[in-house]
Amino acid sequence: MDALAFEHAPIGLAILENRIIRRCNRAFGEMFLEDPAKCEGVSLGEFYPSEKDFHMIGERGLASMRRTGRYNDERIMQRRDGTFFWCRARGQSLTPDQPFQRGIWTFADLSDERPVVELTQREREVAILTCRGMTSKEIGLELDLSYRTVEEYRARLLRKFGARKLAELVAKLSGMPL
Image (cartoon, rainbow, N blue to C red):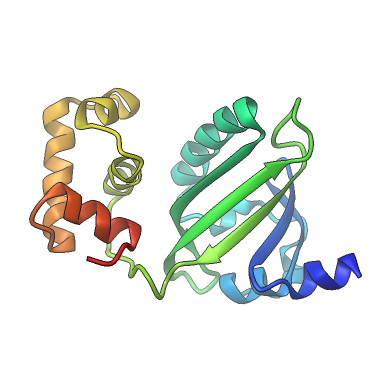
């Protein structure tokens, strides 16, 4: 019965060991355009837009999981055909002393709520941290950028998303109705 629920869950599920997919369900396969059996033994990094995204989000996730045993965010991910999409990821460690050793993760496709706008690596980083409610100064400290540089990236994001002010940008980035 448990295997049936895992396999047919209406959300992408994956069991990860050290960020390697050990098992995933049909919804995961459909979302990432890959046969679930072909995902076994594959690094989750293959589904990120870049290796830098994989490492940056991994560091942030590990820090959170060390504190709470859980992590969640919304990020851009990549399907097997190379297309990008917004995804909500949530993870629960099954090995609290070593958070990435083994865990269960859910993945939800947010494409219908949030279209992907072509962004650079740094724009994606600033967008993610902006959605977390961080100020330009806090983002600058996190990314080792000056306050003015972060403001320039935010101005680019405002233009790309057709937003007039920061609150509207955050709403568009997070898929909230305006």
